Length: 544
Image (cartoon, rainbow, N blue to C red; front, side, top):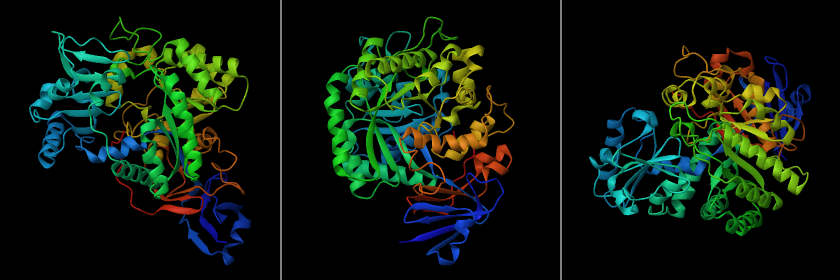
């Protein structure tokens, strides 16, 4: 039996500024407050919080750790600030990896070209003999060179794919920008698969980064069953540094045939018997994103009057698929950006409840950039968990250059209604959507509180009610634990809870709101065992 006492800091649940203690025995919280302090004299380990803050570890309710880890194995274009930097990075990679059949990288900034559209000929200028595929920061868009278009058979005569969009020049030829899976997969199908060792290494890097950010549980919100072997190997080899729940992606064109695959994959995870890996969720992409005009909107885009976006599912097919996976005991996790997609998701959940009857299903709808006011009350009525990525709720260049013109003033004024949704009695969980945006919870919490970003505090806040810091901390901990069906065992500091803990350098509840985003994570514990301890964090300025 090992007794650890944390002391000389403030603690979640106790008044801000009040110094107290927490005792942990063999990974379980056993005492808080004076009773914990009294155990200090017999503790096996004494941990001085140095005036910092101890809270329940963060959970990430929506992220893509495998994609994040794989960004390290291609050209490093994430922080490029103009087209020339991207092209130089691709050229360097090509020179240093002459044997690579394909050059694949992520994630470029879509605001670096007018309207987010990128030309294949720009990539041809640095690599023309091999195919190149670069993913945009949104992971709903790719930029490819002419060789990749040629290999994939994409020409002026290629019809517009189902569930995708090929951006074209005025003469009808493909420009080099492809949107959504229906178009992206025309190219991605030709890219050689990564070996298992590469995938395991990527998962190790990503979950280690999450641990350094104070995270102990992650919802991987887009998993193909073909990747399951890598997750199982990572768990077996001790390469997972957080808990991970897998959400297998339901394909609108072949979902019925996937049902046995989903059941078999879940059975394999259960049979493996590990404590860190689960597979309880099915992911549905209902639409795309606002910035590429693929989010499904009730009314047409302000800058494209003939378009309301690109829905991925027919209503009847989505309802049938959702009823089927719910009847198998899976949790629903729905990507919904546009207000029409949100409405379709709510209608689907209502149909599931009507068909399968009441149970503790905890359906999740993620992103929720635009919600029609008439649909807001339905979240509580249907028991839907609203999962927001709070770092998006700011006026950054993506918002001002791409999002605002597409939505128009009225819809732009009611984006990411975190506080309003919570005030209606709905459970709000937080996520990062990493690698779309950064994985650190503290900048997300700070953005939720202020509706502004880190790079320039003088930029006006995004319209919408601010979210209290205590509520924001709760949305990144207790509410994610609820989403994970684990609220009975972790997510709060209470006797009997599993000691998934995070140590912050200062108490976010007692500092200026604009300083919350920059609070550093000094330690993370998973069931009482440290997964990160006082490692310097990278600078966060300018990270979205």
